[in-house]
Figure 1 (tube, one colour):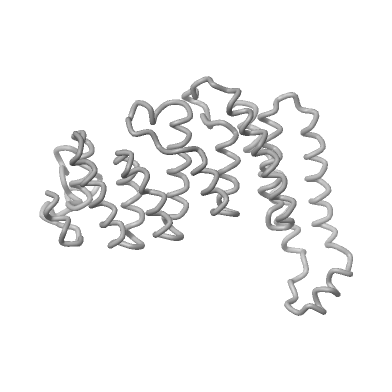
Figure 2 (figure 1 turned 90 degrees about the vertical axis):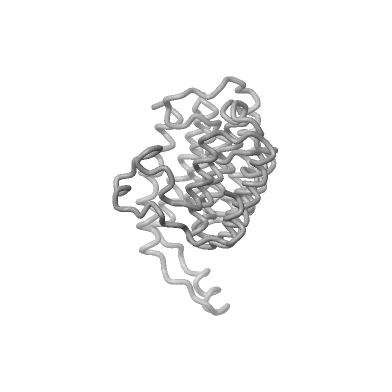
Length: 275
């Protein structure tokens, strides 16, 4: 595990329990203006003060590190933890380190290395930390990376690979929260012909909004017909409509023998004409 990844994994383990203790000891929020003013006049929770002090020390200490990637990741995790307690400050930290991360990504033109925990620039990791706090901001950051490559070879290398993974992370995040936004995030995969990622996302979204997922599936099939879909793409399309398609021949699921080979998924009528 490289130094940046090790620090990124270790820091939250140390700091998060401290903030959890602070949250437990923090006074309950009061709704009225007078009560809020009264609370503001009271001394801050000592545990929370201690945690903030520790994070300030971490921010100061990281300035002495020679590895700029490491400094960015430490600041990113500090901002991640601070967000619930001091959102404006957390936003400022994220904004500052994003500018640095952009420069670092431009300087590092080498291809990702296989076998390490994170094969993407720190920019990607920073955006992933922002996503749970402000999905609109994260979406804009992802979209600013440009479109997804249209051919498989390009999608699997360099910045195109990073762009694809960011889009996938965005869609997965929305899949369990907002099906419509998840489908919007999945559309670039249909448009670029990345049916492998698309079908995985449609399976997730379908639990929340089957009709919308089916509509995007039809768009993907229409797109595939314009080219030459691979055998794997065809298999995935068929499995969307026929859950047991290829069971025992093309694939072997643990419970495959228990499935009815004639079982059909309940889909919109237009899907039948696709096969």
